Image (cartoon, helix red, strand yellow):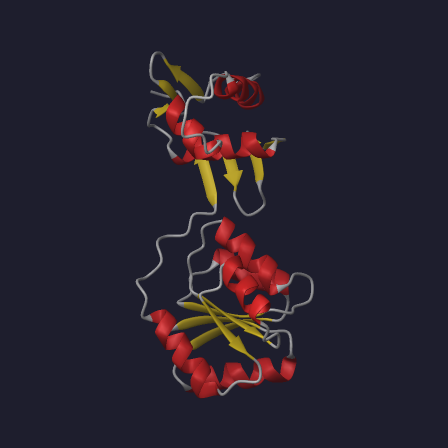
Length: 226
């Protein structure tokens, strides 16, 4: 297996890395939260072993970020915090399992093996692109023709939905349910208002429109090349 170990304690990290390699696994090690986040988001691993308390960025922040970017790699969270609330917080943040320090290596290995037996994660997508429009899900940034576009949170959600469904028609009802969690007709023009603002930010000043209205149906996104 290919494992990522994110642990800032030099002695503990060296011990665990050596033991995991001796058990036949390939191990990448990160000693800080930021380095751990970079590797977790950019490389493919079978399991991530993640310390909770880390410099620069703690384990829970890493978990929430990679889960928000739809990184599905199983994560085993290591921590000295053994309270029920602590365990619940870790699992709610996206951990698949939780191991309290100190622990026996044989138990760590058993938990890693159990996580690895789960169905393999789907391909990780951290960047969406349509034409010259690029959305970085980790950085929560959007650019078109390499120029940054500032979006409000709801506009970002709306654009992400359109980009994930590029080439397909999305209806007003689909947008109300997916973006606003409305399962009824709100009798407002909330979709049209937000779409108008989003189109102004995305398409204004560019030779090709990316967001298109499908009369009587909804909206679609494509690069207009066809």
